[in-house]
Image: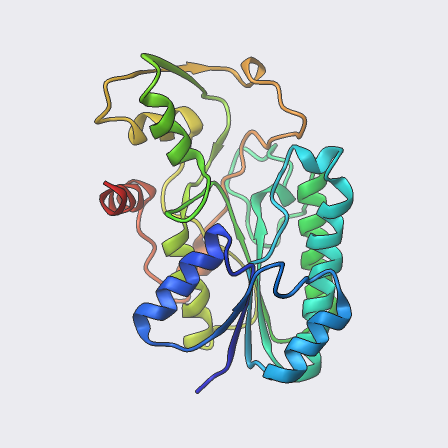
Length: 280
């Protein structure tokens, strides 16, 4: 049986991936930051040497986008670049395939069309810069890798936009949501399934982009989330909610390469409906 190692085991994606593998009866070793600090090369090396994984799902990441601009800037780079380098080097040494999760924030959001996998990157915030540096580390270190860029992630096992909207709807008659930022929502279940699909089907190595099908603004996403709630959702411009970190205005990434593997990508509306059924 293929030996699997998961980093970021207790994060939103890592937990979803563990649940998926549990359902399938697939064994794995999974570690959170307390059990394996990926910024510590010696700790990473010791785990990899002991376990000799054949596949590494690298879900660990620093994702506090606004904090990454100042107070969290150092840890952002330590985790997303240095930590990824440690994991990639260890994977290379034991001959493991690596799956690395990246972000739409590697783009600047000025492209009115869909971003293709090979389009020029131009991250405008520290989080995006560090995740892109992680991509480059993976490419420089390994031949057997999958980089998966994703966006607007929501799921059962962590803080996310869907939970925030549902929570606020309980205490507000009206919610305002920005309507000038466009992207593709991604259900962690779909992302976890694609991660395992690439490995199981021995897809060509390289960079992929995976979200659910279709696109929307945050306002449209919120409206769909709250369609059964007694609350008004009103559109506002981004200026209504100033944030430390730059947000791409139009970060819709092409899913053509992912779809070309034969993986069935459901729409974000269908993904949202399935997710809400799970949490009702």
